[in-house]
Amino acid sequence: MENELNVTYITLGGLVDMEKYKYLYFSIVFTVYILIICFNVTIICLILIHRNLHEPMYIFIAALLLNSVLYSTNIYPKLLVDFLSEKQIISYSACLFQFFNIYSLGGSEFLLLTTMSYDRYVSICKPLQYPTIMRRRTVSIILVLAWLVPACEIAVLVILSADLKLCNLTLNGISCNNAIYSLHCENSKTRSALGVVAVIITAMFPVLFILFTYTRILIISYRSSRNVRRKAAQTCLPHLLVLISFSCFCAFDVIIVRLGSDFPKTVRLIISLLTILYHPLFNPIIYGLKMKEISKHLRKLFCGTKVM
Image (tube, rainbow, N blue to C red; front, top):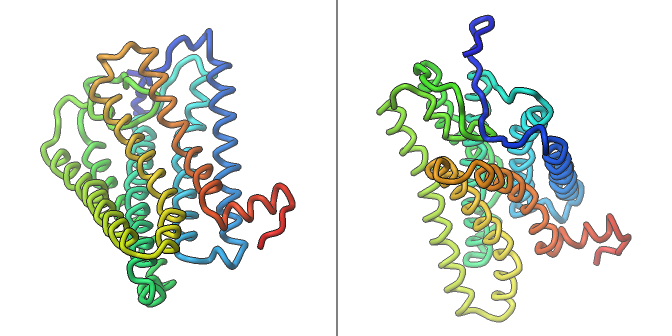
């Protein structure tokens, strides 16, 4: 333990061959981080600037992309510093803060995807009621709750973890994910119970609701006209792709922690890097290519194509 001014430091033990590959690691991650910022912010700005994109569906997309930027900014700068440092360390308080951001933003993404599925359900299955249900005030309340509820849940877990005694000061990872629990001398039953509640509220219920809404959309679209089926395919497919991507992202996070010791260290590092690299970059690419109105404005911005 390095103890300066009563600060406890944790060693991040997930990086390998640092002397040999640190500049390669740094170059790849820095490039991807810049691309993430540019891609996501470009689409967010397009949605904010153009009035025809001031609809609930596009507002939720902008919120989702902002979530990706916040998630990346929580991890990438510290990771870039670690690549060029002799020791990969982080204070325990900073590690808890990173943990809080990772899982509160992850919970927010599930809730935002749930809201987007409900928005598509109302738009396709109850089109006449859509303006009444998805009012601007309702959208604002949903966005606040999508960020506030997971933040409150994870904050309780962080507060409970802050006072637990540490018996291990090496974290087998490149960031402070739920492997942080392995640092503690004993597991808190209260924290475990609250963790289960948080998973149920921010992950299980949303996933079940998303499956229900898309099943209803599929049934109603199948019974409706070709135009309705085309509208459902154009607007729902990008959301489904992002949902599958994020579900894989969450599955990798769990697998790395639960089975990490069974993988060679290099394999674990590669999977960890791929996990944090691909998803924040995947979202803007999918929405930029698959959402017709966003794609039009992107072509106008970069190619000078007139928006019809």
